[in-house]
Image (tube, rainbow, N blue to C red; front, side, top):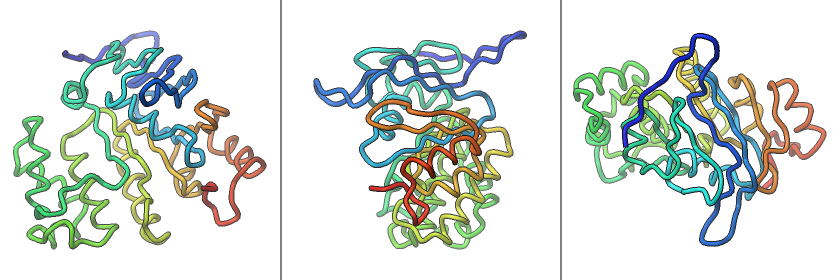
Length: 249
């Protein structure tokens, strides 16, 4: 399957679009008619408590889960049912929950994995170490011995090194101290300023709302609210935001 970007002179083509998605595991649907649109250069935050269907939505968006009903479009092309490798080569990159690095390989060896799209290894290294100088200092270190924050930096560096068109991030803050989360979101902000389209699932609400252009709230497998960070913040605080600044588990 090949995917080519499309452009319209009179309308903005979403880089990623989910329409009427029903999906889940086996015969059990977790998502019940999810609609989601990511526009070029936009940061879209997908918020909600555990079990709301956020990770399943990313699974559909990345091609890992085929919807039972509905369509997935990438840059104006229907890619419903397309395999993950084809979507990755078309410019869609996922940073999964738990970082998805190779803990027994060094930082350099992990970065070499990002050359599958044809990007020269030297270019991959230069991009990674320019964006994350700390990784350059640890280039020969085994990834599993890095701190949690450094491992997440490595996951981001490997994703950005492929020069993706769409970046999907699942729980960037997972298991990290708030000060590290704040630093990582500084990197996300820098990435967003470069014009990359990002769909990010998160429970550290305050940090992501400081970066996002738009936000959606998921509850019980449905998008229950959508709007600007200011609009969605009021809904979150009034409805179900925990006192510690994270969504309840």
